[in-house]
Image (cartoon, rainbow, N blue to C red; front, side, top):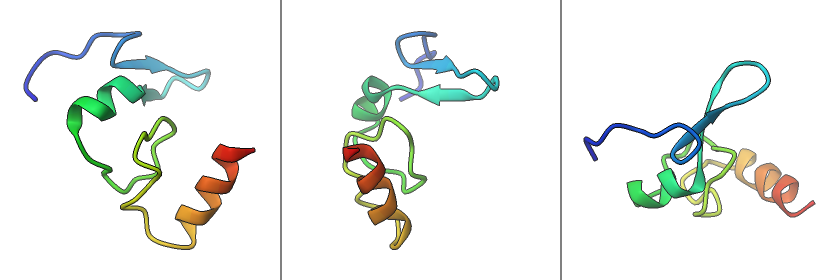
Length: 61
């Protein structure tokens, strides 16, 4: 994936100024990177426990 990212499609800036990758971006990447990304469409499958369980609980709340 060597294409240029598009703001508000592939990413956005949060209130603190950090880059947040969108679900669309993650789907085009094709796998969970294990970092616990906010919009992970893969249910954090590569995130180690106990962080994965905490993220899944937070996502379902």
